[in-house]
Length: 194
Image (cartoon, rainbow, N blue to C red; front, top):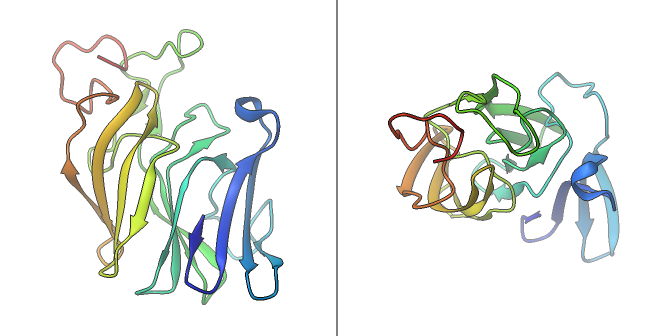
């Protein structure tokens, strides 16, 4: 959920099936003055281009006042990857999505439910750990701060800043738990988590 001070924006989510899906991929705006909802981006293929976030729940969504955009980070999607660290930008002026960061990509399947090999993903070292349910806030100078959340390796306690001007991440406080073995640069990784 995000707000620009006059509207409240909500993206995605899930129904009563929780982790089993289906998940949602729609963007809505709520006008508190009129108590009305407006669908901003319809579910399904984007007629404006291919860069549409997949359906997901517990993603971070923040309003960027510098460029009149919504910034979407992470969440849990319906793919083999599950948790993601993708970044998307929704231009409120143009009414379309842009993918800013692909993040980690799926490499090898798990051995079983929540039994991930160390090479489960190709790690994007310039992005935070894949996660859902983190906390976020947008600063006035265009920094989306993200704290914690739930990763494949448990609860994480790091802090990252996403700069909307440069479309880049900076780690502000490293994780002491919940980080994947390869991302934490641990020697001798045999499973995803250490």
